[in-house]
Length: 350
Image (cartoon, rainbow, N blue to C red; front, side, top):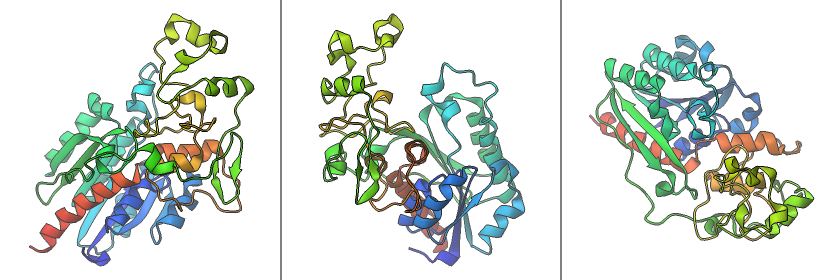
């Protein structure tokens, strides 16, 4: 471990603080996070003090904005997870040519070039590597003197209890860098993670935890979940419960929607719509409801006491679900942080 004064981390596209929280747990000094979504401010600052949240579009940041945050730190780290929707398989059928999020990786690249951090890290969906913007990003890193490590990572290998696969990049001006070896021999399961929470029904809220709330199911979805089995699909339902789309040839392949999770396996990838029974395999393994927000956060490896909204505010399923689903899993962030920590320690001693 080394002192806070020796280094500083700035987190771009920080959201509710999943990556920041993991980096801090690894012992890194995160000084600030930037994000355009102001609703993330409370969660970010409350759980990651003294790091401060700056509601600003990364495209508007200048060299001096970032340099001021780094101060006189010996080592500078720039972290970021540019919004992944343009690169996701979930959006492959959509027109991406004019997506406003495409340029953000170029803006990240610009800030690296202008501020010259010693270490850079980026996390995104695996399909990011299929796009020119990613190739340009890596090529520029190499051209300006960075050693680059990048690979597809199974998050469950680092303690995240879900079948989430991400692309992780680490780059350093100091020398070779890579992600630490997996920390888990066997994956954590859904049961390990959420089984001890209070049972609730659809539409109900745990009086002791406002985030442990589940969406209200329609009458037909109540019948559907009663006929759903862990790991099964809508094909387990009686004919009269099938949705119109499932009766069409085009809908036959959507077997992962309207499903229950399995107790003794990691969960499926947690998305921004993880609280909806019809949006994936997000049904509780035995309670007849979808995931609660707290359960989704725990499956993203957030601590149980992580606060997403002010206690005086009623948590919005939509807004908090987006914060949780968009987050870098905390445990993955911690593994990235430990990798950077070990790397910098080698060079602080030299």
